[in-house]
Length: 299
Image 1 (tube, rainbow, N blue to C red):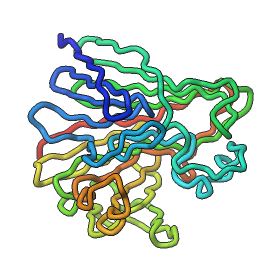
Image 2: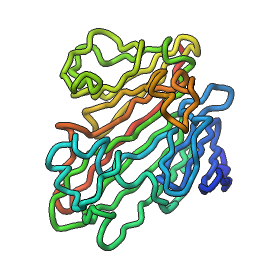
Image 3: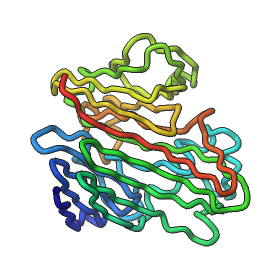
Image 4: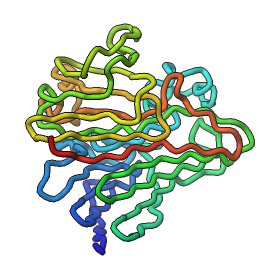
């Protein structure tokens, strides 16, 4: 039975843990319960650690797997039920409230060949700033032959709560211009770069420019096929019927101070999500788990 090795490390201002278990190495920041990187020995990384990422207190990190919660993207683009949960006159930050908050490290438990790591979001009595609802939020990471990520929301309050959310995963690729995504053929998607028009996907998705699409009624499994690295990254989702696929391409990447001008070539975001008509409404006492499992398979 492998013995996990857990090492506390500091990346600039942020406390992190480097966790090694079997062939897997995982790097997680306390801020945001943010998975920064994941790879198996002798293989290219699966989760992309941006070389230019900034690790500052209170600043969200452009890398790895940011947690978007209790809303995704621009709050004003969310269904009214999600917008109504916020009670503040201040402008709403993109992608919710929890990416820049320190989470509490819970149990690290080895179970046979599996390793489980738990993070819990501290719960102020009056809720998060401008969001006065009592929802317990836990992030569970499990390592076996795959990486399993689960985000569970549990409504402890007396009224229903509506949320949108995403595991905003940056996957490492050899060159995004040479990879494609399987599993989308025939799906409806919202083309956010063209006035949010609804379109239909024809065939596999290949990348020739900036991409920012919301796919609807997605299947449980999507695949990133990377012929150069001779692998297929298989993504199996849970508790999700929507996915966001994003790559900033050349001009947009140049606008980011925390990404190299050519960083867009080495990453592809497929975000396991609950967005648009896939938002989650939790009755009092109800809970919901959004999850994704990631594994690399040879072509």
